[in-house]
Length: 363
Ligand SMILES: C[S@@+](CC[C@H](N)C(=O)[O-])C[C@H]1O[C@@H](n2cnc3c(N)ncnc32)[C@H](O)[C@@H]1O
Ligand code: SF4
Image (tube, rainbow, N blue to C red; front, side, top):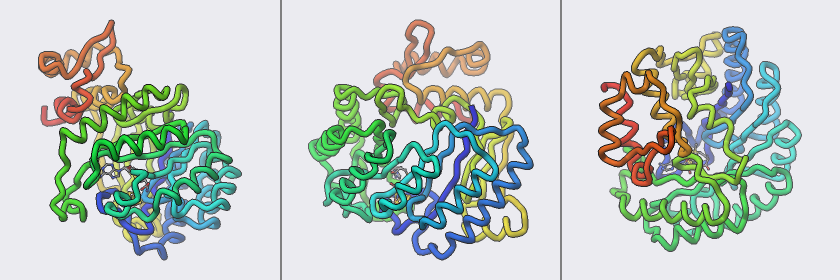
């Protein structure tokens, strides 16, 4: 399969924990940015003539922070180059997804909405600098349900002052709302963010208890834990993300967007102004490019496949390059073999980064 990712780097305000390539206070750059995106799509279409993405993911940042006219412009640009998507996801934040935007998105072919909630507790939402409260989310969610039958909601575990009971409350309240997909992320305190500067440290034991509890609550409610951070009702797994985790090709357009095309990984500049300027001169501002070969390619394939909890059938190449690492991980009981499928053990799910590190250079 092949996927197209479009990055929208604008946010109303910056959340205290977030180090994604997204910025507040540059909303005046939205139209010049969309024009640059159009140009990048045209150039990439000429370059990768046989590329036919089946999934489209518009993420950020905050795509719903675009105006109606800007959303129309964006889709015209995309459809001018690529059509025939099976799944089109649009990321939205509660404070900027209006009824008019929902109607427009539906008309434009969007069939999956991903809403960032993080917590149902207003105190916690305020602490992490979210621009919405829970009742705003509820209102938007109820309207979204009338237009879309495939909705994801994001939650974060391990927020400042969040107890296990607080977190479980968020999960339970969300289950009642019956979205088709729920992502649960353990909080990462990223260097340089306001949260990091505040000196907050995540209690790993507590966070693990929260994630274990989320798994139980969601499985009891009929959700399938199909990827480390992702749960879905049967048949509602994110097709776009599954393509990433199975080493499918994807093209990322926009500032900071990453791509994996013809076994080459590359990424655009994070700098929005530089991105616009470069495309005004018909140049794609690639800042990183690497061809994945041999052991590095196999290692990448293994670590991505381990993210999917169903497991995978290892091939000879995998054992040729990583026999020692596999043995080590079996000894530590972080991975298990079930029939002929390899997957993370119950313990391994919570130490996934340690597992992944074994398959990343330097070996
Ligand atoms: C690409 S982000 C942006 C989505 C959208 N702008 C929003 O805020 O709802 C997708 C999700 O990543 C998660 N996320 C972002 N930063 C995180 C962090 N430092 N630790 C854990 N999860 C994080 C949040 O749940 C967020 O909704
Ligand atoms: S979490 Fe979402 S809304 Fe908050 S700063 Fe990051 S991208 Fe923007």
